[in-house]
Image (cartoon, rainbow over all chains, first blue to last red; front, side):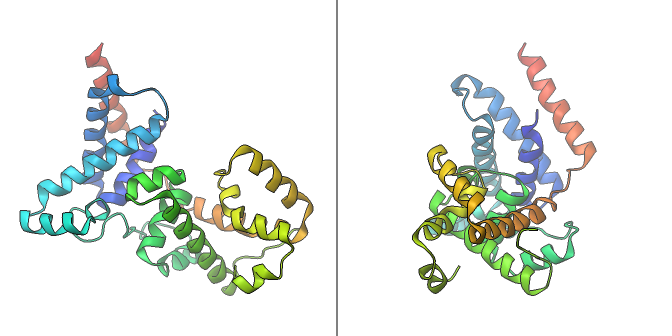
Amino acid sequence: MPELQVLYSVAMRLTRNPYDAEDVVQETLLRAFRALDSFDGRYPRAWLLTILRNTNINRVRKRTPDLLRDEERTLGALPARGADGREGAAEIALERIPDDAVVDALKRLSDDHRAVVALVDIDGLTYQEAADILDIPIGTVMSRLHRARRKLRTRLERDGYLAGGRP
Amino acid sequence: MSMLKMLRMPPDCREVAKVLQSFLDGELAENQTDKVAEHVEHCERCGIEADVYMQVKESLRDLRTPPDRDVMQRLHAFADELTADGE
């Protein structure tokens, strides 16, 4: 099941915790299995990612006190929040990433920009899949992603890591 | 790319610049993809732009780390169990 690795990577970004990520993926698989009859057979990965996103939202709701929850619902920010109520999806964990120069450039991006870059370029999601996970329009994914890459490019060029040009 | 830089470009290159990243991500419609691919192949300026963004994309892809093997084994076992129960 090649989708499992992507599901787990995205779950790690949403939960920032390996135990929660594993739970979320298991719950996602369970829900997917139960809902199999309603699946039209197209885009299984996108379907699973949508279930994963909803599973994570429910998990956050269960853990978040009612007062906070109401506030979050008003702000419409719940999907992008982690279990602790702070920014989740948008605040990407970078500590395990090995390449210093790229990691350094990534850290300088805003949370919103880093989130789309991580989902599309590191995890390999499509624009639509990233839009579903972050609960933002696909046009916003595109503009954030393209702007983020321009910033990364500028930074990496400035630091001398990006040669550019054809041989 | 800055607005001024774009204004100084030939119209073809300007159009390509607008969609270059989507092209490299494989997110353009097929007919548009062919046009951009052909342009990038023959235009040095846009070819260089494409190479640079491919380098950025590849350096990010290199950050992808395989998830913990034990976790993946447990998740695969869980998925297999679900399917087996359903049979």
